[in-house]
Image 1 (cartoon, each protein chain N blue to C red):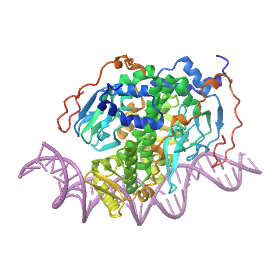
Image 2 (cartoon, rainbow over the protein chains, first blue to last red):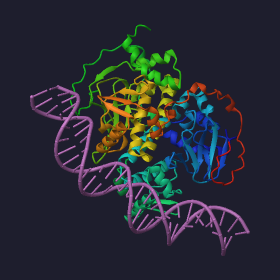
Image 3 (cartoon, each protein chain N blue to C red):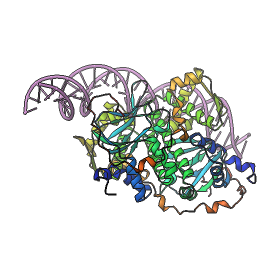
Image 4 (cartoon, rainbow over the protein chains, first blue to last red):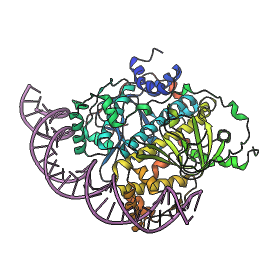
Length: 280
Length: 280
DNA sequence: CGATTCGTTGAATGATCTCAAAATTAGTGG
DNA sequence: CCACTAATTTTGAGATCATTCAACGAATCG
């Protein structure tokens, strides 16, 4: 298959890298992915590739660049729902709905591959296993959102910012776009504020505090975390939620055992004590 | 298959109802689901069925009762990540990780079906299409979390509470547990506060305000929304994100068309104007 | 009935926002 | 490469939303 130019091969490199975290991909699956993601296009920065309320039934494989997924609320305020980086698929899960729930905009000049959603859905019948692997990966994204919820709901502004930067760095590391303590993306204070539900002014003050404490410096579109340990402690950050267990580690029970076995009796119910786990 | 007692049949009724929203299930798939969810057990209220940091490799099909998924932070505060209702599967996506990310606790006496995670994962190979459908459903949950993020990040306390109640009602309606304006579950102000990142005292004040305005009354474990329209306007609530497009509506391109087609040329790049969508 | 849990309220405090304006930097066109 | 414009960062002061703490009444559980 060396007919595919190198450019092709690179297009799904980071996606494959991410998916393989969860589930090894077969060479054939890799090939199919590459074919689906073969309609490659550059996008200038500051462009919406998906607009809320419209439904183009397309998904975008992000090959290069940084994007944000966001919504503008009635009062004009913006909530950034997440930062989209290479290897991510944009348009999910918005494309599941009649209208896109969020807009997606490039922050930098980017390169994406466009595919009709139907092609991805088609995998359900033609390549159900691959489809399941992709959806498995999407499911894991829910964990990230849940973590954002905790971050925004129950943490101080300083902690939120710390956590935000650490998570972003960890995600970038997975796709090889960050080293152990820094990464290079243009992260304006406005974007940070819109992601964390904070005002620009306050983000600025907190960022300054982090800088004064020697923990983080943002300069020239580059974020350098000088003291990862201290920042992690401050943010109560543990990256476990970004690193799911590979599927392959599960013993495969091959539903055979399921066929037999009628209805089982209820176990005796559990007394109503306070802080005791359910004995299973 | 009338060998299965009625109790059996009911066990997956609400799950099937929810899954069928997205994708019709075949009778055979329904049967497999029922078999997986056949280990039915009652759980008294206020019990943890999943504890953060442990990994029992199990999933729980919620048949009856109300539960919460939550985490306790270092400082002792609690973040409720979501309300778990019949038809939901608890343990996802926590089970994807080495350790559960969240605990799940019953709010009321409940009934759940326990299944080894491996059995669900086994579907990937034995019933990949069913597995994909289930994971598709999980993916949609990400939309709900994203919406929570918007809710917590960019809304006033009053709006958050309004939105929270409306979403919960809508989700309950899907599984037939709420009528057009009310539902019956024991929702303490503490739970609401922990879900929305608000203090109990403030939840109380805002709830009182909603009551004084004649919009919502919570009494005797029953939530009655007197003016759904007004509350929806207040919360800027549109339930689209809870109602995904069924998969069946997509034209199935049957990846056949994919086989052909070499690399495509890059389209001309787009000039860097400000607020213009990407022309696709 | 006794013990928790849950709801209600007030006053003081604090975190974060808004508004406004200046200083700085980056981007654009000639 | 310069000049200009737009975008971003920085800073201050006052306003506000929401919290904390503390206390009490009401409801619920066993």
